[in-house]
Image (cartoon, rainbow, N blue to C red; front, top):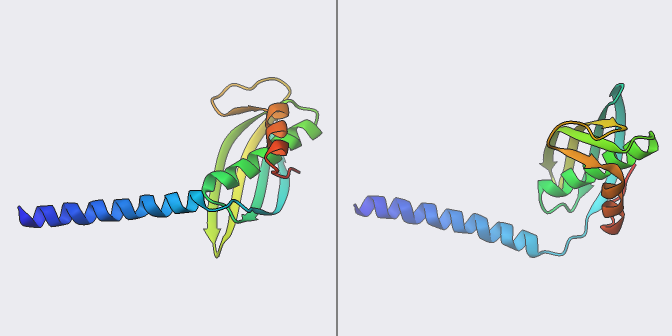
Length: 132
C-alpha cells in the first residue's frame, strides 16, 4: 500500500510540474518573431504552406500563423474559403516550423475545419499575425 501511495504521489507531482510549466509559459509576454511563409500550389486547389517563427508559446501559435497564410492566399486567388487538411509542427532550438495543407474554394467546402477567408484575415490583422 505504501509503495502505491509513493507512486501516486510521484505521478501527481510530475503532473503538477507540467501544469506549472505550461501556466508559466502562457503567462509570459507573447513576443513572436515571424520568419516567413513559403507557399506551394500542389494541385489545383490544394496548397501547402511552410511557416516558421520564434517565440511561439504553443503549437497553436504556429497553427494560427499557417491559417492566416492560407486565408490570405485564398483571397489573393479570388476564393473566399479554405479547408484545413493537416498541419505538422516541429520545434527545435526555439524555431517552430509548421507544414500545413489546405484546399481553397470559392464556396464553403464540406468538412469540419473550414474557414471564411475574409473573417480570418481580419482576425489575423487585428492580432498582428502576418500573412502571405
